[in-house]
Image 1: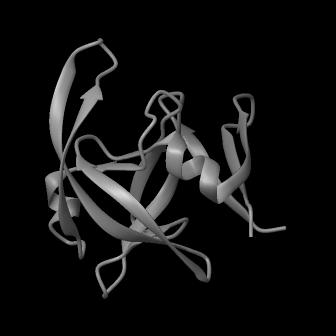
Image 2: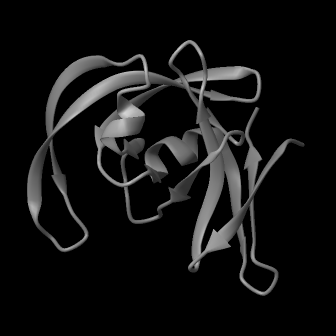
Length: 126
């Protein structure tokens, strides 16, 4: 059973992430932190400076509803996420650095938040 471990930062669950030399986003290792956001139904939202480091293919635009209810059109890109020895296709948008539930539910079988011990654990499905 493979587990990705993270922590809580200001009560938000985060895991490490990085960018591979081939332009793919690595989950579970790296120097950056990505928030696991149960309110974001997409795959990956990332700041422009991270998107610029990734090998992405422009895919078009899609309508999103923000947390405050506002509906906005966002550019979307196709890219790849690396988790352990596997690669997964993902949709990327520009914004805060977030791992959304669409991708998280494909990658992980459970998501543990331990507020008392400030721990986060995600069990990898494969």
